[in-house]
Length: 299
Image (tube, rainbow, N blue to C red; front, side, top):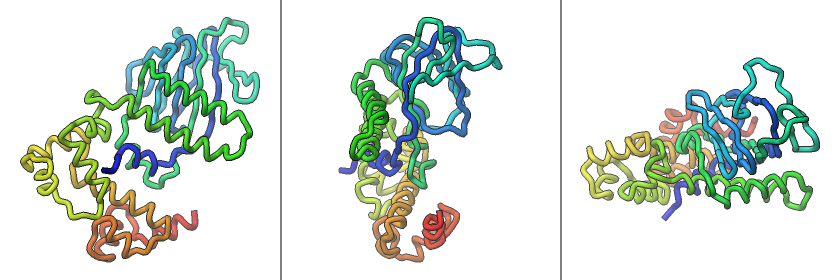
């Protein structure tokens, strides 16, 4: 069957942006606004504070890995941050290597930090299926992947961009696998951790073109309609058909960009005619497929 987590990451198309080695000493603080990009951090040595808007501060120590797929405001600082508004000391000592705080103070933190982008036009939908923040400790595979990304970014080897794209995909998948527990907030990972819902999610991804209703999905899951509906919405965060339609439209956008014939797209994402697909696409996206195709071509 299809692997929903792998498919979501593949459609997101994570692409490299910035990768840097950061050290800090004394009192320091860096701040990122919502205008930033997806962010990850691997703490190699020492410790620091990370405060994401609307959440309690997290103390990060050596071996911690944090991935923030969504765009949030947050700060990273020394364990005792400087007063807000204080002059931010930030020095690039060599390409991709930054020193925070007092350059004369002993280094108390060493971290590999990266930013990336998502190439998908439907990234808002796809990112909404992922946890807002992933924080795991002691996963050496993740630390090794971040080191490889940093090394590849610094080097000028053949096929560098392809390697970085693949490494980012593996990093995202491994981070999601490491965080996949029933304790996660509602979303795709929590749904995949539910033994009764995981087969349903796999079927939706494996064959989005088949006829689906809440009743047929509930029957395949061996649950009553109401029990299935409530459980799906509680664990995945959206209603079953809302999830199925969102996934169908995400696939349809990719197929339009690949210039697949409209009749074939309609069939592959579960609509009996081109006109029915066009109406559904317009309702979901806010423009008909042809206008979407022209807008993407112009962009």
